[in-house]
Image 1 (cartoon, rainbow, N blue to C red):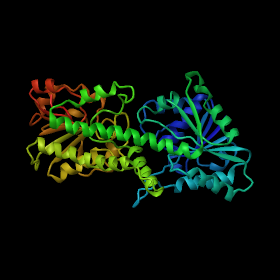
Image 2: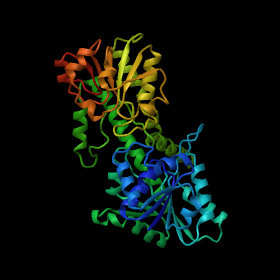
Image 3: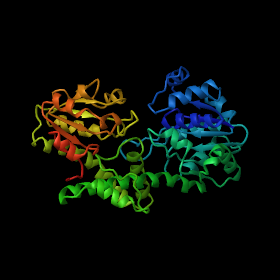
Length: 435
């Protein structure tokens, strides 16, 4: 099939590339000429394992191309996906839909034959109705159907998630559109991937509800971690003990410094706004937002307490800056408020992250970005592990201790065993573990 993807950000680029790898002909469109020029040269604007190779393969096999000419790409498409950004609007937290509405107007002006217009961006309930109204207003004669098809991609595992998803959600009442969507995802039939067809507004809410539920799980286990520290329990064992219950499951039950990234903070805030405007507040989500914001600063305070309450003049090494491993995404990363709070308390920060230091430099001032983990910890009074990159799991602990000014380790991801660290002479503290 002929697919046009409006937007070459994270969702658009991954989705377009994977559709091309399924065998469809895909044109990715973006207004940013420099980004399109870079993509045509094989330069990928985001870090996602395996994406560069997959883009190159499908460009080489002439199934994937990039352009700034939206009109031509839209006119020839069976399906046009809207995959533009929907950031939180400044001031009120609502999703900013200006890019979505702008894309709808462009699509309306260019479509010719029957076209399925697919909202891939995460949008509030009712956005599909607005997109439909815009297209009808701009082009009353257009033959089209608007479909909600939310994405469920995890940064760092997005290609696997797209090709082997838990489910595909399709929101539409139009049976012609359902058939187009089934054809687009036909390569997944071998995996017996469930395709859930719903009303459009239901589909839009599914995305927000899914992300909010996962954010609730993360926040719940973080609060259990705090309780474990007070009562002498071990949060990892609590997590395993409840995660073995099939009704709960083990995923997203790892205590840490709070959630971040491009989805959970934005989507929980948007769902909260949707609930309040509809007269049905989602009070659990409201609480999760506050608890998670507080959590990040509490982790900085944990470091300060571990160092005796006064860190003025001390050097602290931070390992891991991105909000999670295998991405360079710094949006709402816990490292940002943690580093800022430590700096405000008088500490000097040396930091290392395998891929996100360039992005981190845009949101962190007066940080010394280092060449590697050992460079970062040289003469440090403490090391703080914020992101659980694999390479931090197997550090040479003897070397680490020998080059630090003081053997203080604050492990906010619980990647080391307390007994091992204590035996090696480290003054070690983790999250939610009293033994």
